[in-house]
Image (cartoon, rainbow, N blue to C red; front, side, top):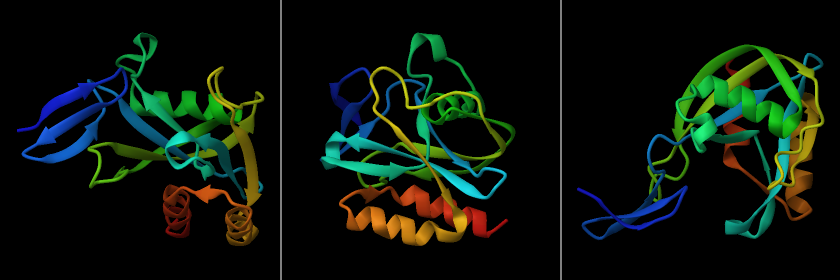
Length: 171
């Protein structure tokens, strides 16, 4: 049985017989969005991530149920909200794909991945007032080279980008 040894609003540090790991408190979940435009471009975001001290290329993603206003929201509603907030896109078709551990040796966090189709740009995106998000729409035909170029330029690429590309290859 684990016990919380340190708590913040968004994370708790737990000890389970000497194995320390992070947990999300309460009913906070994580969603990730795999969105491809009608002209076959993958929608990605880029932002600075303090834990790795680098800008990271990622799928749009975010927390569900993390504030009082969003308590009890479904994962799909959270995914819709995060896609719009981070990228400025809305989608008319949503499919829940998989729930994946984000770092199973360090946290119990699962990321539920959604496939979004029929995307339409309706806003600027860029995140909320606490975020500095760049939006990229990259042609799938050249995505591997683009990702390699980003890494060569010193950016990191979140592994979920590659998971998303695998999911697309299974369609």
